[in-house]
Length: 242
Length: 72
Image (cartoon, rainbow over all chains, first blue to last red):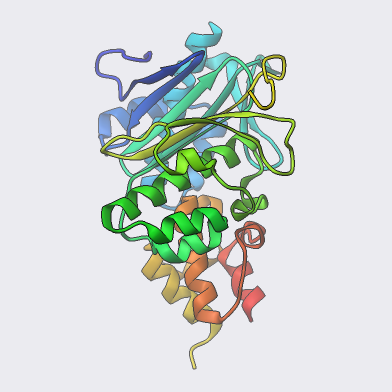
């Protein structure tokens, strides 16, 4: 099983510099799910069984097995040698033969779509969201958007409003995931750079509370879903104000 | 008036699609609720109970029972 292997449920979605982003097809599929389950180690199978519902079980199995395949290919190791642990905020990291390996990855899923991002180094976050209308966009925007973002959102109308909401959400979520803090960082306390709120797909971002660290931010959305990726800039190449 | 548990149970069923009330005691991470649905649910809780819980505060609740106890 490898990226782009015939019949597999994941394939290369984008290659951005040294980052590989794969798309995972999360459509219910008994054979794929059984195949994915066979890739999991005992700790992962226990995790799978703790999920109370079928949907999160399927998401976890298909994404984790795809991640295993991608990491094994990148690291040149057998799946049996690979295991995962989690940081204090729940962000997973990989170990081979019990030792943490120098590779960054992040996983996101929404509805039928999963994305897996892989990079040789630097903190990395990815987010994907199907643009569903069941969310109270106005109510959620008041909780997660900063003042400038709220103003832009309030002036948008109809389909543009739906698209702007999920564009901003995925960009902010990708940054939070890259930082690895979860929602212990209030998402309304930082804002997506104005050009990216008005159509630019790429930009450099700095959190107000850590201005010395730069993040490469890119919107990856298409007609099927909104998506974004955030990757920590190499400090050696990060020239502020560039 | 309905109890806090009944009101939260109704919001959970409506906004998270979880009707089994025994899941109020499950770890939130085991329910497979994604972050956007979590924040949407938080917004409805704030409206229903007239509170102003932040995502940061909500992230500290391990179970929905923790949320019920906080609001009781």
